[in-house]
Image (cartoon, rainbow, N blue to C red; front, side):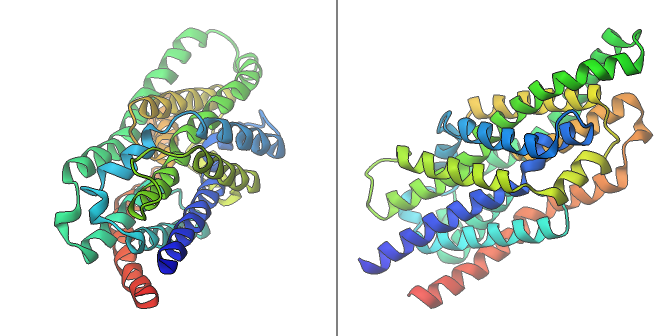
Length: 332
């Protein structure tokens, strides 16, 4: 019993660490465009994002239920060792990609970590392939949707405001960017923070601390607080990559990217689907840039990001598998 309690405590601590890292790793999602166009001062943008991340995280628990119930077949196929290993793999991947300033997906990392740990512990019989397919489809499809819808939104804005001078348009849209950045921060919290909520709740269920998969209020508050604190720290490496290395943003294009990203992400939250906010934002910026000129997008940087998208799940699956063996050696 003491060992189970220690493992549950470890799961909660690692899940909150994952949320904290997710906060500073993905701060760029909400504020990179507004900071790069100087619509918001960096410190003001980060604090606004932290508050709205917290509020968004308290919005619902639908995504948490998807993470907690759709990757494994049942709570019988997962224990605290598996969850600890999955979190270790995801946290390590987030730290590595943050260090090299690569905008990767915390969602991909977490899903990959769980898959790897389950495969090495109970085999493929423990995985819910239908649920995994649905999650992976949403993770892959959302950035593609971001590219297409970002192109459409930017094209519409060009047609509506193309007759005005660029200086007048950008002056007006600087103010609008504050609103779009706020929407982006709220939608980011509403989707990303729920992933660790789902992991913690799954651990509580497998440990017998709760009888059904319902996210307790204190878990919501802990996860929301951890993400908000991480956001407040800021992730300047990723901010620079997203805010300037993909496409040189102006206030009108920054507004279009944020508006489009927040719409895609919040729609996914309403559908209880986990998405990579990093990938959606990056895809939106690519779409917005393409609407201006195809060669305005730095496709070399985009190619590096796509490689990270492709590699994240298999890499974190391997990390999760190795971490599981290490966890078993320590606790079993």
